[in-house]
Length: 338
Ligand code: GDP
Image 1 (cartoon, rainbow, N blue to C red):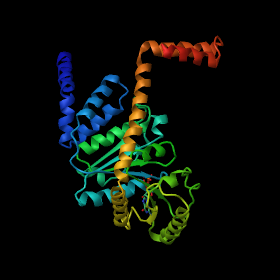
Image 2 (image 1 turned 90 degrees about the vertical axis):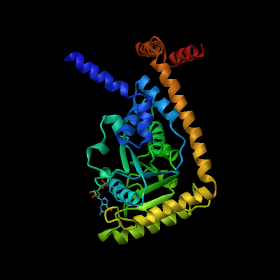
Image 3 (image 1 turned 180 degrees about the horizontal axis):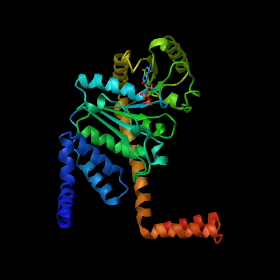
C-alpha cells in the first residue's frame, strides 16, 4: 500500500514540471494559474526557481491589458463593487483577474479577506479569477510577488487586472508602481482621517470613487464628491494633463458603474495618447527589477547556512555585551566585503 501511495504521489509531482505550468497557463486554466502563483509565493528556493523559469518562458502577449489598483478601508464596499463591476465586464467579453492584497495576513498568517465569502457572483464566473495574495514570500514584500502574479494572469489571457488593497498605507505606495491607474474608494460623508486613509494615498489616486451612493446616502455622496473635487483642484495630478475625477456609484445596485468603467478607460486612453502609459510601465519594470533583484541577493545570502549562522553569532555577541551594536555591524560590513 505504502509503495503504491508514494508511486502515485511521485507521478503526481512529476507531472507538475515547467511544461505542465506553461501549458496550463497558455490554456487559461485557472487552477494551474493559482498553483503557479503559489510557486511564486513559495519560500522554498527550488520552487521559487521553477516559478522564475515559468515566468521566463511565458509567451509574449498578443492582447492589451489594463492594470487597475483599487484601495479603500475595510467595509467601504470593494468586494461588492468588484463583484458587480466584474460581472458587467465579463458580460462585455472581458477576462477579469482580481488579486487581493491583505496586509494583516503577514501578522496573523491568515487572511481576513479569505475568511468571508467575497465576490459571490464573480467567483462562479469562468471568465474571472480571484486570488488573495499570501504573505511572507521569498521576495520579502507582498507586492513583489503580486507583480509576478500579474504577469502570469495576463499570460493566462486575463485582460483586466484589479489589484485590491485596504488603504492602510503599507502596500499602496508599492501598488502604485504596479498599476496603470489607481482608484481610491471612499464612503459618503467622512473625511480621510475618519476613514482611516493615510495621507498621501488620496494624492496618488487617478480616480476617487464615492461608493454606497444609494438610498439615504445618495445626496451625501454627491456632497462628498464635490468636496473632494474641490480639494483636487489644488493638488498636482500624477498623470500629466489629467485632473483627478471624483465619481459616485453603488456597488450594490450597480448605479454609476458604467460611468466608473468609462472613466477608467478615459484615463487609460489619455495615458496612451500622451505615451505616459508606455513610459509608466517601463519605469515600473525598472523599479521592480531593482526591488526583486535586491531581495533575491539578500535571500540567497541568508539561505546559505554559513551566513545565517554568522549573523546569529554576531547578534548573540551583541546581546551578551561582547560586541557593541555598531562593532557587530562593522564586523558584518568587513565580512561582506570579502
Ligand atoms: P470591503 O470590505 O471593502 O470589501 O466591503 P464589502 O464589499 O464586503 O461591503 C461591506 C458592507 O457594505 C457589506 O455589508 C455590503 O453589503 C455593504 N455594501 C457594499 N457595497 C454597498 C453599496 O454600494 N451600498 C450599500 N448600501 N451597501 C453596500
